[in-house]
Length: 266
Image: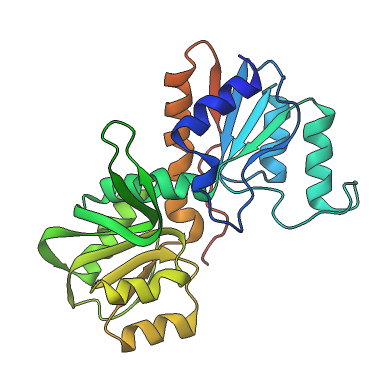
């Protein structure tokens, strides 16, 4: 398959126009006419990932987080981003990122399914999309909110989060004994959806990247927060996209980065 054929297939399901306006998605480096026999899937294009992509002789790297985010005026070996790009380009590896378009079209739904949420709806609506089969409009956006049939304690909710996403620990703001049943969920960084979670009467928000003031202010407004880490929930992208690409391109080998949490609590 050619890289552009793989891109077209991906963008039929995860259109680039679903990404938020500040994002940078699509083919970020390399040739769209590159012949692809092996795809490598990862969450981030770290040094370790780039080295492994080269070692595994992959032709295309697909990540969730874009390596190129802000404007770049130079690409050289004096900058860590430049060094990674030079390695990819020097080995004729096409590099594709799918960030908030994947978040909008898939991430929250997948995370909610793993957690067993019912009666879900979009948490932060960013736009409307037309259903091709019916012509009807439906909301799309970041995160989702749903519920469990029976309330559980916040402590039991933490245990479910750790089991669902394979995270060793979580950070919690709130009373571990309180009952929760209405669950807001935003994989990645969820600072921006605290207001929406409160407006939609969530008992708890499960997300990442919550700092001290955001956490205690949320609790003061009767919203508990479980911070499972940015990587902690979003790593589900890796296996999901690997499965999607294997099914979509059965003649193409698809490999993925090992799950490796980026920090250790000691």
